Image (cartoon, rainbow, N blue to C red; front, side):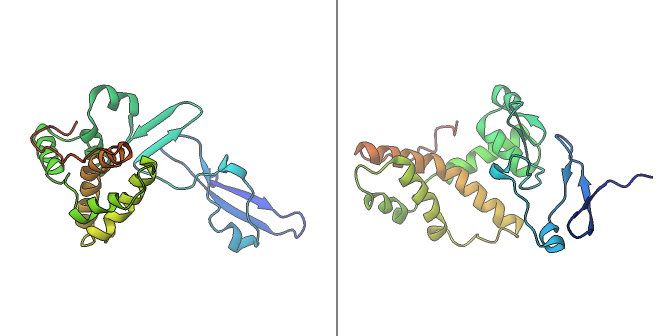
Length: 197
């Protein structure tokens, strides 16, 4: 039986190293060299990570050359044509699309979490009037952890979901506040009577 490995020989020292080949559900196989440095004392050289898989993912598959993007195995174009933003968020968090009842509950929860802490709103006043909206948005997202710091244990699934729901809910408000600040016009609070998307 053939082993699913690659054997490398250092021609300077004669040392032989064996590395596992990992097979994904999509895309090319991957050579597992995570112990390469400890084995050889050398780094690999791959400018731009053109031949490097930086992580394994059960959530996203990307093949830029083929223009392929999948979330949980579903092509992005299918999601864009047949599902809304909150359905896609639910899919990413739960590994499946929501039922109609689950989507209604998720939508209601997200709409109710869209408000920003008053202290976070004051953060926008500290930015110059000519600050780029992306800079203010970035700073506000970073500041979320300061104002909502009771659910930061990402190893705890309930806390992880709490954080994820909070970010999903607050991003449109933060984006709107960032944009309105750049225009010098007053902020408008979210209207929970309106649907999310």
